[in-house]
Amino acid sequence: MNLRKLTTQAYLEGLPALVLSSFGGIIAGLILGGMKTELQAIPGLLVLIPALLAIRGNVYGSLGARISTGLHQGLIEPKISFSDHRVKAAVFASFINALFAAAIGAIFAYFLLTFLFEPVAPLGVLLSIALIAGIFSGVVLITAVISVIFTAYRNGLNPDTIVGPLVATIGDIFGLSFLLLAVRIIMGGG
Amino acid sequence: MRSITKTMLPILAVLTSIEIAMGLVLSSFESTLFQYPSLLVLVPVIIGTAGSLGSTLSARLSTAFHLGLLEFKFSNYHLTGNILSTMALSITIFPLIGVVTWAVSTIVFEPLLGLFQIVLITTFSGILISIFTAIIALLTTYSSYLLRLDPDDVVIPTVTNLCDVFGIFVLLTAIFFLI
Image 1 (cartoon, rainbow over the protein chains, first blue to last red):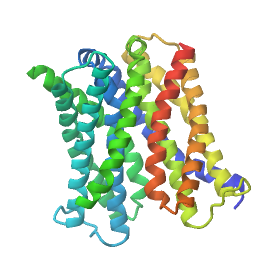
Image 2: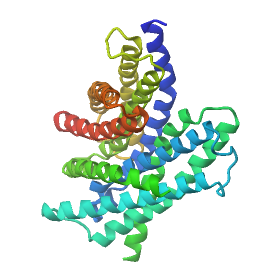
Image 3: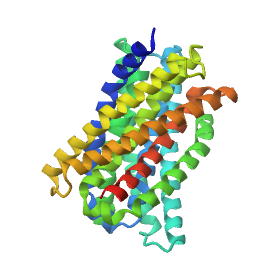
Image 4: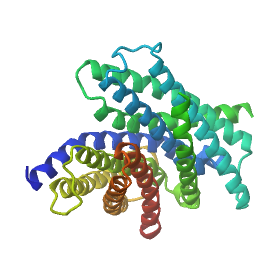
């Protein structure tokens, strides 16, 4: 195989997933662009956004990779069942990790902004928004990752090439939608 | 389950702190971002695409490495070919992102920024991001080889998060100079 062939092949294999995740990114961007009022009402929220989005990719991307490796190695049965202890353990661990990281993010953002004498919403507000958004998007992402991996695997597709773009595409969209919902819940209640 | 949580939590805490620091830089551009909603639209797009480029390149380098095909020489096709394809992907996708972002934000929000300005911002960011992605993916793959760590565990999360952070940084630099 020569250089030209290899480059072309890598380009063509990479393009569809990249186009898909950019499309998801633009939808997520439109949600963020429409959140101006909420971002201005809750100082510190904008600081949290890159962290909250990255957590989803890190945690649920790795959940997908873990389950897909388990399937490939024959350690996990290729049928959707939460009674499988490996699936159950990986799912609960990822959910707890995501919530823990969201809480760390909110606490860190709060203290950093306070330390810099920047305006910041009360810690309880930031923390509840991060956790509510984390719970909602966790449930959706776990359901999506598990069902897509098992469906792909049973249909003879390699889940490894699907999980990354899937989490990247829907993670940001749901992440930001649920963040908006969480802000509305907190602002409506407070 | 406890072992998964135990190994991932410290890494997650570090990555989250880096992202918060980046969020702080992002929020220092608050007034410009609020003034032009199309720039706010670009934030998740640029972060996501930079991360995807990085994770694709590092996954391909890791696989080539596992298969014993990768050598750290410029005469190695798997090395140069994958880097060249990352550059080509970046040059294709970033101007396209600019055009689509301009189109949708003109429909949804007020058309405050011109097509040319947005495409210039995304293209400029894309070129710098692809260079950075190649350097970081190479360095992390090479160091995981030296340290005898599995590139799958180390390279992909490191490259994806660093590309995320660099993506925001480049976007803000582009906004600073071009708006």
